Length: 237
Image 1 (spheres, helix red, strand yellow):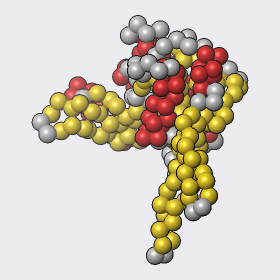
Image 2: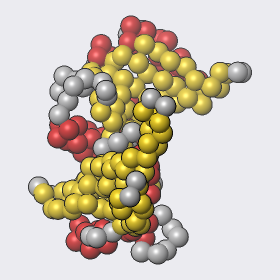
Image 3: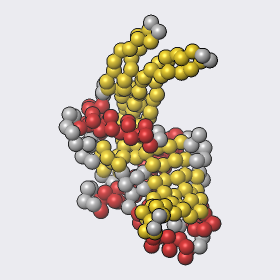
C-alpha cells in the first residue's frame, strides 16, 4: 500500500515551545460502554517530543466500530495513530502529517484548533507550491517522469489533461498543454530512486517501498522549500 503524507503551513509565527505548550495533553475523550467494558473514545495527542530540530508527535483517534462476524454484528473499540511533525523551513513553520488526504486534513484541523486557542481563525492551512517551482521537481529529468496532470484546462468539456512519460519527451506537446492548463500533479522517479506522486497542495504519495523516515525527509527537504518560496512571494515570510 502506498505511503502518503500531506504538508500544511502554520500561518501564524509560533516557536516549537509555544506549539508544544498548546498541544501537550490536548484532546477530547469520553467514556463509552462496549459489551460491559468501559472504553475511551475521542482524540488526543498521545506523544510529543522535540527530536533533531523537529517537534514530533502522535495523534490518536479512538472510536467504536461495528464489524460483522458471520450473522452477528459486533461493536469493537478501535484506535488509529497518526504520526505528525512540525518542521521549520526558510524561517516558516510547517506541519507534515503521515496520512492520506482525508485523515491528514482531519488531524490538521484538530491541531489547528488547539493552536488557535479558542479563536475561530484557522492557524494551520494548506501549503501550496507555485506552478513554476513545482515544475522544477521533474522538468530537469523528463525521462524520469511517469505522469503529469493538468487542471483548469481551457477547452470545452475538458477539465483535465494527462500526459504520460513517453509523451512528456515530446516538448512540443508538453508546451502546448502548458498553454491550455496548469500543472497540478506529477508522478516521477526521484533522485533518491523511489517513485513518488506530488500535488501542488503538498500531498505526497510514495509508490515505491520507502521507510517512513526517508519519506518525512523527502517532504521536508524537497517539497517544503518550494512551498516556502511561494509563501515568500506572497509576502507571508
